[in-house]
Length: 76
Image (cartoon, rainbow, N blue to C red; front, side, top):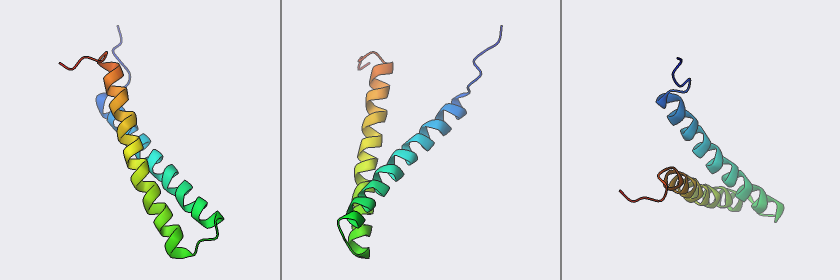
């Protein structure tokens, strides 16, 4: 029988790419909102930075609930 076709390294790589993608998407969203509001370059940069921070928290939360769901909510 064939074993699993996805290795642990593939899973880690996908997870890392997904987290970076979420952070970049939210950071771009913050920058675009600041730009649409008529902000100059420092304000757009602040929107991107704020979005990156929020995206980091969001990526951590998604990872946390995903691992909790996989463990069945057990704290062992």
